[in-house]
Amino acid sequence: MEIPIKNKLNVKELFRIKRMKEVIKTTNPHGHKEYLEIIYLEEGAGIHQIDFNRFSVSPHSLYLVMPGQIHSWALTEIPKGYVVMIQKDFLLDHPLYDTLFQAFPLSFPNIFQLAETEGIFADIFRNIEKEYVHGETNYEAVIQTYLLLLFNLLKRQIKSEQANPNPALLKNFFAMLDAEFRANHETGFYADRLNTTSKTLNTTCKKHLGKTTGAVINEKLTAESKKLLLYSPKNLTEIAFELGFSDSSHFNKFFRRQTGVLPGVYRKGIS
Image 1 (cartoon, rainbow, N blue to C red):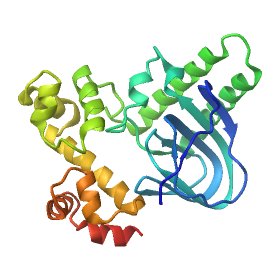
Image 2 (image 1 turned 90 degrees about the vertical axis):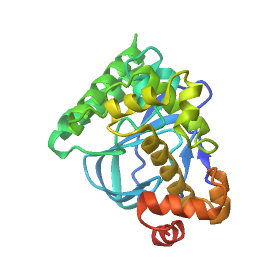
Image 3 (image 1 turned 60 degrees about the horizontal axis):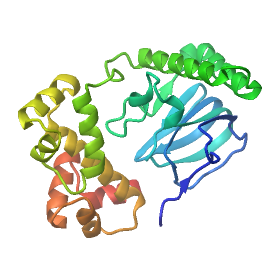
């Protein structure tokens, strides 16, 4: 089956906040058309799947669904909370612009458990909703300020350098990797296209990510492999070719080296 891509925003609509529909529901896997979705739940239970990760739904949880990600719900209790949709252009010239819309690696995790600080986050969403509904002078700038506060508080939650801005070389590498990973698996290709050396690119990756360029490329291939194995109707040979492997044998060896299991075993286990 083809995974549908939903667009809940109107033409030229850059931002929306609404209340989560208070119904127990199960949704089919779907993606979103080039916008970031933030879901903050004050109540609810069930499962929220994002790409190949399954998260338990619990009160005071926040989820980030990035452009290009696939997600679905299997709720067992009525959810209460907020859904925020943000187009990239809403944050032009904003400190969050590059960080939030980096396709790979993700700048933030997909889930945050916020029970210990739920009052602060609930107030932020209530204030964003109030600004959006009333639409007073400079309301968009005020919403952008609340979003900056929100993500700075989330940085504090992860207690790491994970959400710090990366240098331009890495940002350009990530963008190129997102476009080229299916056809090009070698460090040298990306270094040449970025007008640098493999050594410089490797050193930059090690300094800021703690891993080699090759490891980053392999992580991207592995993540996309898992998504295809979970959501695509294609057989293993077709998936191997789509990801730039010469045959299914090479794909099998790569996937097993990265995950410890063969892709066919992984597909059976998650289905």
